[in-house]
Length: 126
Length: 292
Image 1: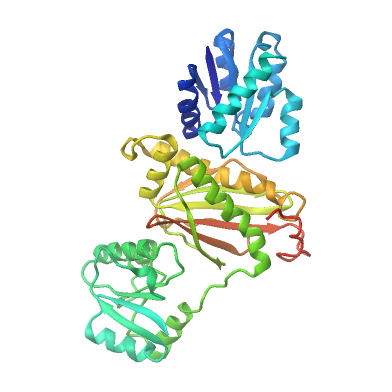
Image 2: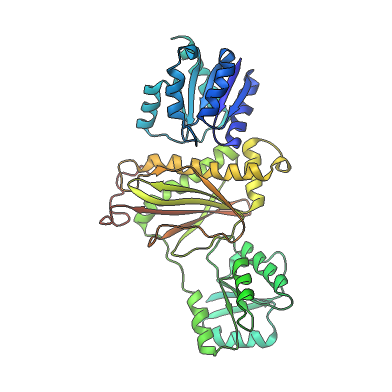
């Protein structure tokens, strides 16, 4: 199965990939929301999880969640937001748009791995 | 007594400077070396001899040795050739002085450079402390290093001599900028740690990207602490500037807090320029809401 990592920072994408790969996933990377939607159009069937930044150029994470959730073909995809935006209102906004989990930056690998596991478990059990 | 380090100064120049500053400063002289502990001095004075490029290189190394401290680096050089003066200033000099000028004028200029920068009041530390704490947390969590806060001062007009800056614009209740500036070697080590690869695997693209992400994380995690106060802000996307001697623009009339940190023996600096839109509120007036 695949994980799609969406962040405008190459360094953050690599940090996340370093955590996700040992969990047995193949990693796809996108630098903004539009690139993410392009990749989903090709690989959606095998993508189980999208890790999504909020503040990005071209198309931000919030708009991207709404567009993913508006497409019924993507119902099987779990979305975990990973962002520097850490205020309650922003987190509530992300969940209201359809995010299934939220992790604030900065994070360490253990926190990220744990958040992925718990978010996916809750998503599968819905 | 202010400690003034004289570098490569001739006997005649040392005698002249002693006459000008000797009553208020402790002067010590030595020849230039690569490992100059400039940061222990209150002022560094270099007498430029040989080629302009060689002298500019020395200025540059002395500036690095100051580790971002507000230490004036003065170049003694005869004449008023603008290109030469600009070269020294761009290398990191605070001023270029000719001792052909009257001693009274030289004394006034040098004493002016010795006026200390303002340090924050206790209530100003209330809005700087969250930035300090979150900088330490970001470096610890993301790069597994201990960033130790050293000191802070305010500057009105600031040239920061580092190799790379990650900058983020702030808007909302407060406007301004926050920037992190590092020398290349430390930036490379930090980004390598973040990505868990050896430093030699880190190219310029990773360093540019990483500097932007560091300031994004520091600002983003600090933003939450200002909720409900006049200092709350929204974040822009980060930008990155590369090149020694770059100067960052800040909103007019605002003070820039320069926060110096060290990772091991290497320094980096965070510039915080945060100006509440409500000018009736002086810094520190409504800080009770900040979670400290």
